[in-house]
Image 1 (cartoon, rainbow over the protein chains, first blue to last red):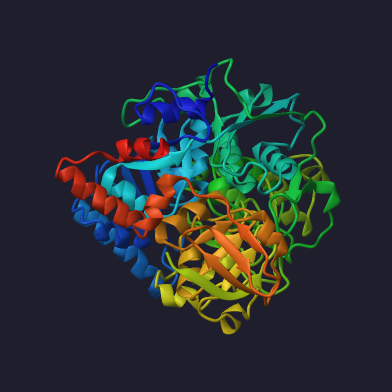
Image 2: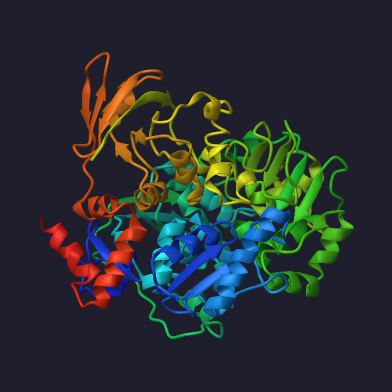
Length: 423
Length: 183
């Protein structure tokens, strides 16, 4: 019997011929990531190992993105710890304000994570790299410290759950809608400890930005990773970006798959996840008309150029509803520049949206758009837990960029079709 | 290993790490500051009520969401002696083992235990004992490799020892895993 992509990547990284679900292995890590929240804890733990130098200064990325540009003195201290460590250790991939981006948009863009890699990040959305056919998984700070010291980490090989999407995508339905729908079907722990594999004719037609959105939210179903088999679209994306050699790995035809789901998306409506769980996915019509105070378009989930293009197509020649604050956050400097050159930032500004420098900011209730008690937001981010974007009595509805932009104009949760013809 | 004893504080399913330690407090990594806000968005009076040694009991998928290690750090620093749950989210499970916060997976105990009960936990045996009713539950056993990490007091001590051993040419981590898995 053959093996899934996850099993084959992990076997290679463990130096084994094959591995099986449930097996405990030690794998070599191709790239390790930390941010301004998780790195200071990891650096402190790294010091305790007695190891003087990190295992490889080119295979560690430290990205200050959560509370940056620093919102207060305490968060500035956290970044200083990171910056000093990066300097001391000669870490190549530390990116300062003005060059940085939201980590999971930045690393693929720079070609630092590649098909066939094992990537760990002290951030739960490290599963984003599954879109490249990499085994990316979130860990804690102590795990990151162990990897910085040794270049390897223990894993339990996960079983694979395959999600196959059939049919043709209706207008205004994209990657975010597919993943919200899938999480709604699986539940927040439906894929606990498992690797998700997204497949089928719908996935193979999606561009990389939509694929990143899908893999990004695998964790919201409890999954360890969320992979898409690398194909020509993947290789085209990686071409010219890759900073080192890589070997794309695909699954075997006869691989054992623990569970398989088949979904026809021909009649899928754009989705929204109601408070307070990403698994509360519903068709947008079920929440339509809910008044909105703030709309956020950005994050490691939906802050890429295709997301901004979609939002701009709806906002062009229109104004954000007078009662609504629309905050648009391009996820990286390169995306910001691209959006500038394409005239998207002008469209947002004329629509009376605020455009921010790259930051995770409001997604985790950090800064740049915190909600007051009782306020309601529509966000293209990934979590809508209690207190996620601010006050514990605020409410977040998760959606894709099209629903978010339409809702900002209408002043209430809306299907993009409500705006009529796209100008 | 020691026997823990404490009062039960009950929580439901899918308690996420934003509820355990909201991100608005993550501009520091000082354990004491984090502990002051432990469980705040699940129960804002928890820190005032809980006493050292007390035990958190929860439903399925405890610690889901963000990978922040600040969550188990806050729980440990708040004096909570262990967490018993029907199941744990994967990253929280790793983090708890890595930093030496005792966790026990027992669907039976999680379903039986009620807020305010007094519980004794024998970590060595994985045994949970509710004192008034006398009911005993056995938690899901940890694989030998994870017990090894826990017995050394966490992953960093494990790595420290491994690195020291490698320097002196002793067996590698991989052969340790293999030998333990065949135990």
